[in-house]
Image 1 (cartoon, rainbow, N blue to C red):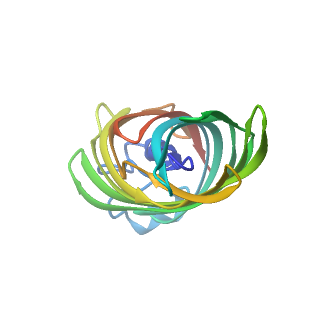
Image 2: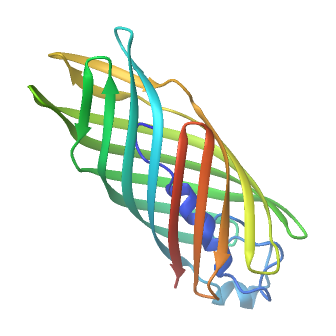
Length: 240
């Protein structure tokens, strides 16, 4: 993964923050439920704040037939605005604090670097306890690579991804969901005194997640992605 964009999973936890009395199949992304009465719409939460940690592992191909395996660790904060019960607008920032890029000529370690993101989730379907939604996110990240005997080099990535989730609400507390995403975007790096451009060899993710309610004002989540670009994340969210 070029830049950590599993922030989309963070907002999956926010659905748990709507009380059972208010929901009719709460979405797994944002406090997005089915149509609500006007007085309930006036009192529902309109803001959410979350923090998550994540790990990604992927294979990259660069210009000049150069291939490498990348791993990254990151921490991310996301602020979400909920203009309607079915729509979530997100903005976030964080830091990728560890990781490496392994090439045939050796291992390049990443310095800490910033991450910025914008996202939108839309609840498109609900039927009883079942729900479906569409997700999108654009992220930008930067860092420097270091290798013994070589000068450091800047490393920047842009990533745009679209996805879908299908889940079910169980016991008013648990919301397991399946997910699929497609994505793409360039990596800009300098290797062996030459500017190179790269991208992932896999442009998809298939995995699952689980959000667990901590009451009306909080929730936790975990997500694992074993297919395509591999990733794992966990976090906590509150609404206000």
